[in-house]
Length: 184
Ligand SMILES: Cc1cn([C@H]2C[C@H](O)[C@@H](COP(=O)(O)OP(=O)(O)O[C@H]3O[C@@H](C)C(=O)[C@@H](O)[C@H]3O)O2)c(=O)[nH]c1=O
Image 1 (cartoon, helix red, strand yellow):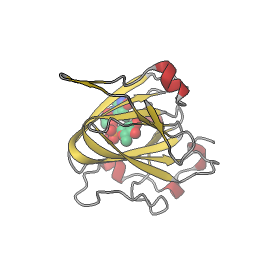
Image 2: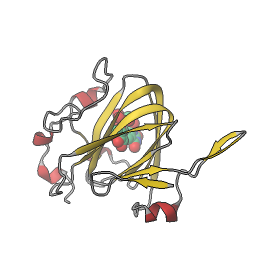
Image 3: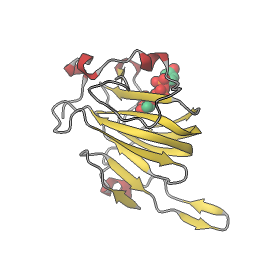
Image 4: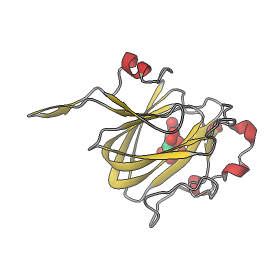
């Protein structure tokens, strides 16, 4: 597999080695030792799957207490996936990076604990599979507005977005009490 460069410390983009033959293809989607060497040191304790129609945008989500690292991949369709450094005190606090993840490119994104995560569907329906380093904890779940001007995320889709009521009611980053963020 290849580990591709990112700008934000701890954020890891992985291109698995895909083995193709006349039947189709095969790849190892996670292998503890190799992924640890790529910088994913925490154990995963929960696997999630979601499916999203064209136009769906989910995020920006984070959880604290019990911040989650997430290893995200797309099993059907394509999304533009964004990670935002929300580790208070980080040199790159408030900065974001976005990547296309698709069933065609097989790319996986590891988003460290303390980051915010969101995505918009580029090609639907899009099925996301992601492993988490901490279990879901509803009381710690938070949404930062995807269109917060301070984050200025350059979403590749802006028309006809389908956003949950919970995400529309999200806070701007300025409104998030600092004690709710993970310390860098
Ligand atoms: C995330 C999650 C949700 N749920 C429930 C809560 C709710 O009833 C229903 C849908 O939840 P949500 O609307 O929060 O689902 P969703 O908007 O898909 O939330 C996800 O978004 C992406 C961007 C992430 O980064 C994930 O960590 C997660 O926050 O599923 C669980 O039971 N376990 C979980 O781990």
